Length: 315
Image (cartoon, rainbow, N blue to C red; front, side, top):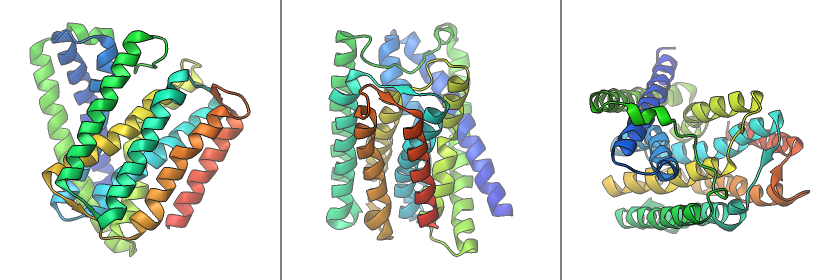
């Protein structure tokens, strides 16, 4: 019971720390005169990946490679199967042209790239981490250039204008609070997850691709459901895909630059990452059929059922 409490407390700290970091990052970006569009496409996306990043680094440094990798794989599966599935069930989701031309092909590229790197030698090396980070830089450059050309084509994460008036002192306090919460949250979560896995007699890979992944996807799920219920612009498929790309490229990229990640559990390559590829791939036909530019309610049901099936098979 104590270990479950560690996991829950760790997740709460990560969620709170991530929120503080997002606000501080956006405030600082306004101070540096960065445009709202660029903030939405880069700063917010990176800040919302901070919980996964801290968990992966902490796990990799402690020799828990399964948690370091499956934290990202599981989060990407949950973002599509759980978050997108439930949101589409509440109300259909509009898809724009950029999805077909840029964001979906980029998601497939990064997903296949990480699969190749891990399948090749059961190792994510420092050099491969650098390749991921360079590829992310190229993707962001193309994305920002595309957004500048056609402002309607890119869905930008809602950036709060009020952040422009935040003082430097407040920004520093928020950065300190966010960073501290993320650090201790990752400590509690990794320690608790390891102990829970041992007590249940399952691998760390199973705990990280289910409990941890769902936990780190809770903020996206809550925000998406609330927006969908209020019938606001429910969720931007572009932002969700952007989050998945950031998870692969920045989280695993930075983690492997700090310390190379070895695949100890073969199921990560033989099963888990194939499910991640499947969920990424199926987005294209779902958004194209039966009608272009939309994901319907019944398609949301299919995504959600596929996610439940995945969780059942993992356990």
